[in-house]
Length: 185
Image 1: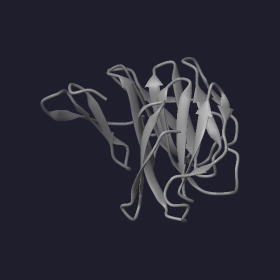
Image 2 (image 1 turned 90 degrees about the vertical axis):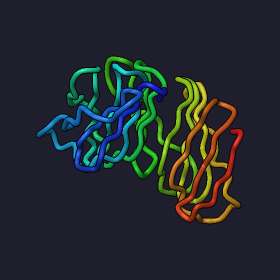
Image 3 (image 1 turned 45 degrees about the vertical axis):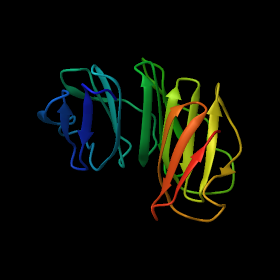
């Protein structure tokens, strides 16, 4: 996130914060709210982080404490990306999406294309998100609309592990095999 702030959350829901010098302030994410197993965390600032779990639970951090947020039914959230405190996109493994508008979560459009598991979402802005899928393709969301899947890992069925986008025009995708591809969606 920045050289002076980063958050890490393990699958048991224990969060550690980095202040630019040391890791510390271990806290349990929304204890007792079925946030485990935690799948992903994303922070827009030191006062806004989101955690999603495989149980469909969403928890937020306000700079001081974690709390559970009501989210529409998506039972297996897998990834989240929050470029702003007023916009996040969360996905489940099947490509169903949730969108945070700064007030509440709402169900977003389903990702189009042939069935493939969705492993990771990266949103460099509130208008641009990219999903990495298990078939080695990426799918771009721009201004509220999904494009079609585009193969980026040689068109093979390599299990995509993660995606990161530094800008709407540049993403890096890595497969569980270690294969890496860059994409300009």
